Length: 176
Image 1: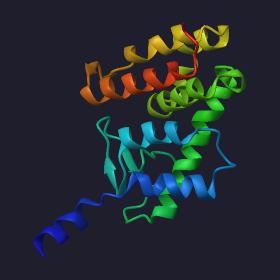
Image 2 (image 1 turned 180 degrees about the vertical axis):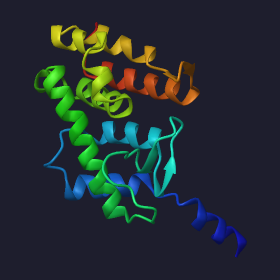
Image 3 (image 1 turned 60 degrees about the horizontal axis):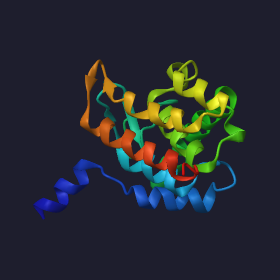
């Protein structure tokens, strides 16, 4: 019985379940593919109760920091809806500042992932976005590993995430 109590208090939800809801109920609302959602979701993890992320920002669900966050348990459906709203914001940034409509799917997904994580205000003037606007996608993909710090400190989780984003980014590019 003690283990069940411990699981309930950790407030972990399933990234796979949330992705399933998003792909079923919101597939027409976002462009990000299942591969892109998996990178974001697995890097962010999922919690149905609010918590403070490493940057000390109140967060819930899969990295959601926008809007009002109430101190309560959130349902999978609420988490999926919040996540879609946050994904849409990242996609809008990529579309507006990085020629998102022209990007191959894998490049778009990787760019949405980093934008979701870092924020539009930092990404829109980045060298990576400049490369994307110029159509030099391999160079843009190679910028991803540079974004591995929080508060000036290299975080292993960001190193891993950026390498996964880079691999995805390069996936659809014919580099032979």
